Length: 141
Image (tube, rainbow, N blue to C red; front, side):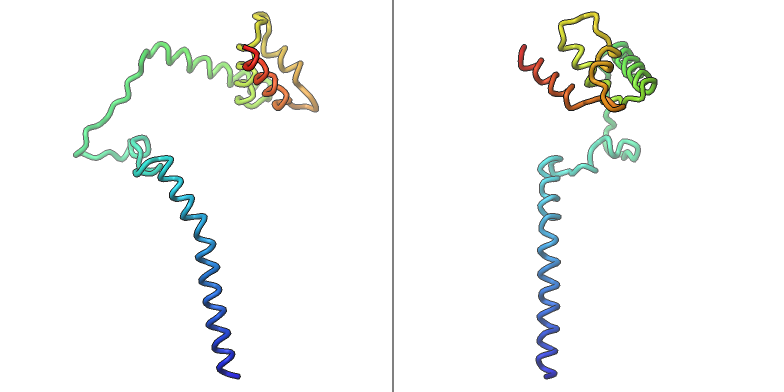
């Protein structure tokens, strides 16, 4: 009787070890996928991740803007778009979709408010239909 209890404990321990190993397989696969995506350095070893740490033996890289004036115009556009989104209680990503839709349309007089009026249902913007319209406009051109 005592020998069978001892054997069953060994079997349970062995099963627990096997179960843990099986649960670790997805973690190992995801780690490998992360290396493929970010290279050997991994996502945390990029220049941007360590730009504040810096080391004395490495030359410091500088990121130069192509045209500083152009970047500030883009920043102003994004700030205005985000302000418009906050004023209309719409996420900025949805406003980005509206802008893409307006860019693909041939109607030059159309504005964001017109699109919101057309695709606003049940108290929120119907993004799925808007995305389908964008896809149809892209395919038609």
